[in-house]
Image (cartoon, rainbow, N blue to C red; front, side, top):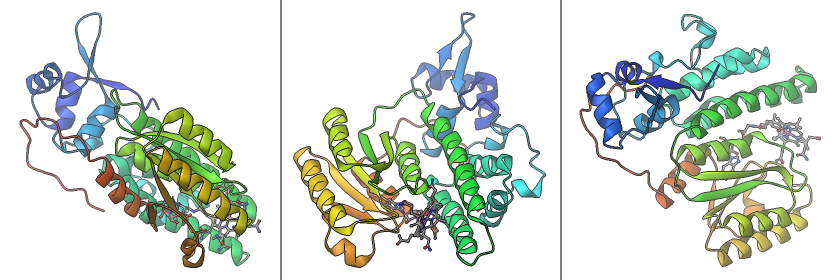
Length: 306
Ligand code: B12
């Protein structure tokens, strides 16, 4: 599956429910980015159609016509978007279904933060409970996490393949001795989808590397996804350093993750704390509102069902 693929003006028109000449006009008016083949044909990135449509700049269209998910028929019930199906796909190690469910949810214009909070989080929590009560060996917990990560990376490369990104920079990761990667990649993908340029430093990252990254990238937002704290005192010291660095660099420090209970939070410094990816999305939208471009020829809305 080539997720950075291009479609013709004709295909874009079919997806968006408008005429070919409308698509060509959008391209010529710089509303819809496109490149031209040597023969002069406009080629449009699938990722740009999705992005501009999700932003409401282009019509909502019919994303089922997008050539994203080719290998599994829509009629397969395991393919339908639901937390239960995603959990089953992880539990039974069916990577195709994991990919399809996440990409279909995205195509259906379900916000990435909602995919995180309502599909991924409950599925992983269920898998964690099964491990805790002894019904699922740790091997499967590891495999499920890897499967989920790889589907999220597919989604990330789809979002990242769009033509233009002028957004502010956000940088972040998990601190020392925290190896939980999913919440961190989710922060990355949520911000990327909202138009930020993200630099993900990954798990188990010493605070010195965060500071190095801030100096190098001059971000407007620094995030820490905290699932597990092994040394609370060291964590609090690192947090003070990072907060001061963010303040001196004109950036905000954003914290979240299930490792931060209310007792620990009282001892920390931050500009924003969120319990969920939806909280993060709302905050990030406030800092950097989506750009609105001129809108033309919009057909009636089709609302996603979820
Ligand atoms: C997968 C997993 C692992 C994997 C991680 C693999 C990997 N490469 O990522 C492995 C097996 C390695 C692992 C190891 C451990 N784990 Co673990 N793990 C989990 C599990 C099952 C899922 C975590 C996950 O990815 N969830 C999916 C994410 C998306 O959901 P989430 O974390 O809830 O995040 C949501 C919110 O918190 C919020 N959010 C998260 N981050 C951020 C950031 C920002 C900025 C914002 C605004 C919001 C936000 O939004 C998210 C979406 O809604 C959980 C169980 C559970 N209930 O979650 C345990 C769990 C997190 N693990 C736990 C523990 C204790 C451990 C170990 C110490 C076990 C051990 N004895 O060795 C080690 C520690 C390793 C380490 N030093 O990091 C505990 C943590 C308890 C705590 N925080 O005090 C949990 C909760 C299990 C439990 N019930 O005890 N784990």
